[in-house]
Amino acid sequence: MFFDQELCLFHIKPEDQTHLFEDMYKKLYLAGCVKASFLDGITTRETEYPTGLEFNGVGFAIPHTDSVYVNKSQICFASLEEPIIFQDMTDKNHNIEVNLVFMLAMAVPHEQVETLQNLMTLFTDDQKVNQLRELSSQEEFSKLLNDSGVY
View 1 (cartoon, rainbow, N blue to C red):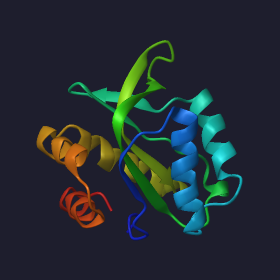
View 2 (tube, rainbow, N blue to C red):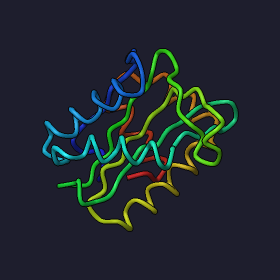
View 3 (cartoon, rainbow, N blue to C red):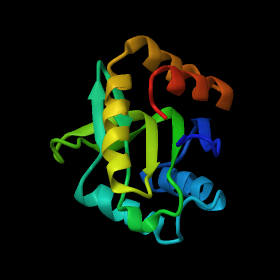
View 4 (tube, helix red, strand yellow):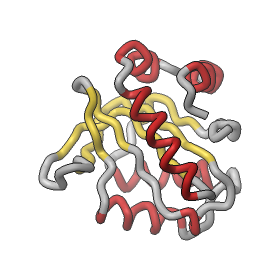
């Protein structure tokens, strides 16, 4: 399970994308899931291949990078009190206000594709997205993701 390390940040208020990435990286790093180079890898990849996307008026981001930076597959989740701007994954000239972030740390490349597909399905379910925005505990989060087929 990619959420077993309980790496969630609920209703946080990072200053910007840089601070958000640092906060999420620290959770992953301190849990031993990623290497010290992960933060640079994810920041560089986000610049080249943005991960912002919008479904039904809600902004999501799925920052991820190559498996070479990862020790153990895991996902860190953050819900934001105030949105942070991400570039649209399909058009770098379009910005998206993001409130829900899933930072992927996948040790095996094929895991990333499957996880992205499962997350995209979750993002189209308005009821579950509303629940994601309101969550405040790891238990609620894990149950929602398990019920949604995202492991």
